[in-house]
Every structure is written in structure tokens, then in C-alpha cells.
Amino acid sequence: MKVHEQIRKYRRHFNFSQEELADKIYVSRQTISNWENGKNYPDIENLLILSTLFRISVDELVKGDVGVMRKEIDNHTMDVWTGVMLIFLILGVVVGIPLTYALSWWGFGITVVFLAIGIGASIKVELIKKRHNIKTFKEIVAFMENKNLNPEDGLKSQKGYWKEQLLMIVGSAIITLMLALVALIITKLIMN
Image (tube, helix red, strand yellow):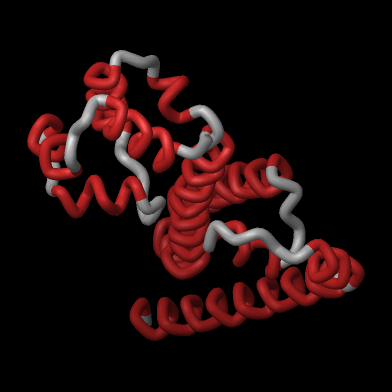
């Protein structure tokens, strides 16, 4: 049974209207309605309050939705690590090259730190992808949108997976080289 079904079941069991339940846990009636319709989930604090009010464990309240909640947590974690990866890899190239040019070994050391953080974040993203058996761009998009990819589409997209990977590697290398060249030119113009 899903969380939204559990909330509705226990609210009715205790003869609470949506308004009464909302007043008891200090949220709006619309929030209760959204929870019961499965439009969104209560946060952990509200789950604890609901479980206490309904005299059940949190585990019993969320039974059936643990997998969905894990996926949402991984989805958020993937967003965070993707952002960290992009920021530090871009910093490593765009800021790192001028720093290396201007500060020599100190600049190079800072650049290495930026790139190491970016690579570490990319490893975290890859671990999340591996845990959910995500390989292709279509699968990543479906995962991020909390949708399930049609198994047939998944097989089709994995057939050309190596081509997509090669294209991404070559494309990333070209973009990185172009950014590095622009950063180097700008640095030389400023320093002269």
C-alpha cells in the first residue's frame, strides 16, 4: 500500500476530515489533499507526526513506498553531485589555466584540487547510475523525471550505448580544449 493510501486509510479510521488532520499537524488542508492524491510526499517530520497521531510506526506508514522514496533521495543526490562535478570541472579548466599561468606551481596545485573534486563528484554520479542500472541518456532523463522507461526503448537505447559514450567523451574533450584555449588566450592578453 502506498503512503497516500495509508494516510487516507488512517485519517478515515480515526474519523478525521482533511481539515481536522491538517489542523492537528499544522499544515493546510490542501497539503493533506495533495498527500492523499499522491501528488507529493510528506517530509520526514510530518511522517513522524502522522505515525504518532495514527499510533503506528513510520515503517508501517510508508510500507510500499520505501523504494520510491529511495529513488527520490538518489535523484536529489544525483542532482547535487552533478552540480558539484560541473562546477569544479569548469573551475579547473576556466580558472585553473590562468592560475597555473599566473602562479606557476601554486596555480597548478589549485587546478589539480578543483579537477580532483570534480572527478570525485563524477564518480559519485556513476555509482548512483550503477545502483539503478542507468546507462544511456534516455535512462538518465527517465530516472530524473521519476518515470519508468519502456523496456523495449531501454534495450534499443543500450544497443547504441558505446556510440553515445564515445560521442560524449570526444565532445567533452573538444569543449574542454576550447575552454582551455580561450582561458589561456585571455590570460596571456591580461598578463601582457
